[in-house]
Image (tube, rainbow, N blue to C red; front, side, top):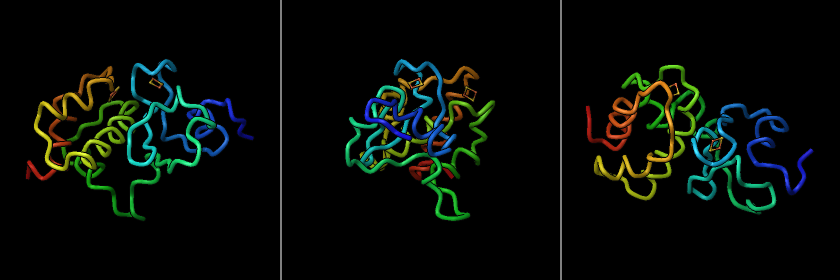
Length: 139
Ligand code: FES
Ligand code: FES
C-alpha cells in the first residue's frame, strides 16, 4: 500500500510489480530508476509518491504498443546496446524524454541528456548510436 512519503521507485517495484524500473544507487546519481512524469525524466528513487502528485507517470513497461516496441527500444535492440541490461530502462526513459523535447538531437545533446545515467558495462558508444538511430540519424 502506497503512502505519501514512500519513494516512487519502491512503490513501482514492490507495490505495483513494475520491476522494469531498476534500483541502483538510491541517491539520484545513477539514473537506473528513471521514469517519465508528464514526459520529463525523473529519478524515481528520490521522488516520493506525494511529490509526483497527479502527474502522468510512464515506466519502461508503458512504452511498447502491444507487441510493437517503442522506436527507442527497437533502436537499442538493433544497436545491441545492452550488455547486462541493468541500466538500460533508465537510459531508454531518458532518451525518450530527450527525443520528445528534441526530436533530432546532436551527439552533444544526446551526451548531455544521458550524462547522469551510468552504465557499469560501458556500452556508452552503442547507447549513443541507438539514440541517433531512434532519431532517424542512422539506418
Ligand atoms: S537508483 Fe535512482 S538514481 Fe540511482
Ligand atoms: S549494460 Fe550493464 S550496466 Fe549498462
